[in-house]
Amino acid sequence: AGGMSLLASLGVYFFLPESLPASDRQPMKRWLPESKMPNFGAVFNRSRLSLLIVIYILVMMSITLNTSIMTLWVAYELDYGGREVGYLFGYVGVVSVATQLLAVARLTKLLGEWRLVQAGIISMVLGLLLMGLVENVFFLAPALTLMTFGSGICNPALSSLVSKEATADERGVLLGIYQSAGSFGRVLGPLISGVLFAQVAMIAPFMFAAIVLLPGLVM
Image 1 (cartoon, rainbow, N blue to C red):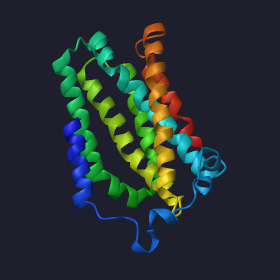
Image 2 (image 1 turned 90 degrees about the vertical axis):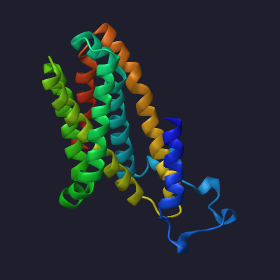
Image 3 (image 1 turned 135 degrees about the horizontal axis):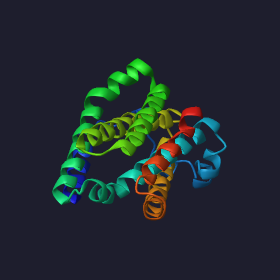
């Protein structure tokens, strides 16, 4: 994981062009004072931006609700061991990459970013609900595909929408706040998932993860 992160960093440095136009670049001494930069309070006074951040928290919470317990769930329900779990997560990785490479750009042009977020949430909800019917890999594969495809189209669209809500001199700060909010969702998901798995039912984390996403469809 560390090696892949290093390769990704080198790829960004050497191959990705600077997105900030030269006319908008400023030396550090000319940046806005900290007191004038957007913070959590200011962000939540902007209704559209706060809506996007709340949706992102719910999406991240839902994703970690199911991924954090998946290994235990397949071990109990399907008697899977380490090799089978590795295959499952490898499959999820392949679907995720294929979604990013082949689907996101085309679907963004076809649906627009807001509808893409909603389509992603619907796909994730269907996949999570399908987990309740899983008895073998023939049900598990479609469920994982729907969940992975949904998150794969939803997250880039959300990030793009957030970046468009920011001016050039605040975009980095707002995206940082956005990612911090997502981290909050990532912390909540596993905490709740373990309790539901142990105290309610083994399938409960997946059903709750589906419920968590529903407000994102009506916001």
